[in-house]
Length: 325
Ligand code: ATP
Ligand code: LTN
Image (cartoon, rainbow, N blue to C red):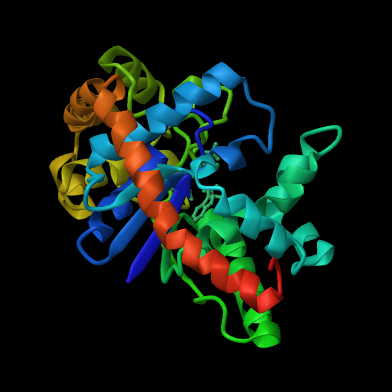
């Protein structure tokens, strides 16, 4: 089973990315051949500062490894280091329709926030399809927000297979179970996000204990005062319980029982400890890896291994289309 997924180097990885996506990435290493990409060409669909982008690429790469992705066992690489992504992206762009791309909710949402939308933002899902199809991928672990993009990838693959003969493996998405969607601490009705303005809305994997404490103690709850899970009536407390459970391995009923009769203060203080202690080993590994020469070597090696898989696939595609000599 081949597994492929990617994360954009657009900011600090937070608990949502970790519990929703990265934890799955680590687990899947037991089940298949995994390829994990840092999708820098997706990042430039919106303006980025060049210096900052370079730093973010290395941050995401080091965090991948700090949470437990093994660069020897899996392939970890930077998208722009393998030129096949852009090449296949073009071929797929010629086989997708402006109508279907106009229906993508991520595009509608992100373009709405701007005066004019870059063309790259419009064809973002086509490049994502190229990422996936370039490696004969079977399974793509992503958050629910990517469902529509995976569906489009399948449509494009099937369309080309029907017209040009068997060309692509048609991939399946692997989505999170319900509840694995981490919500913003300041507004539990919207998802925790890298790009939200309020830094206390999220906990980044690299946050120090003081910042974690402040964010959790400020987190929105309710006036009832009892620690119990009820996503509809008590979204704030329920979100904190989910985070607590995911970080500690304790079940939610177990936690409800433990905190019966105690207020939010004690519960939040313990949650601070659980998060701080849970992130500590990740942060220690991150500090070791981030500045190391080995990180760059691993990424170069990853790009070479990725390219070795991508090249024959691209050759196959070009043959089907009659491209080249
Ligand atoms: P932002 O948080 O700014 O919206 P994003 O969703 O664009 O960032 P990516 O780096 O593109 O983040 O996504 C990395 C992975 O994390 C994706 O698989 C995405 O579905 C998942 N993810 C992002 N936010 C959450 C969240 N709050 N809860 C669970 N999974 C999430
Ligand atoms: N669009 C994705 C990031 C992404 C991706 C991919 C995920 C780009 N290419 C290929 C899986 C497979 C996101 O926003 N999370």
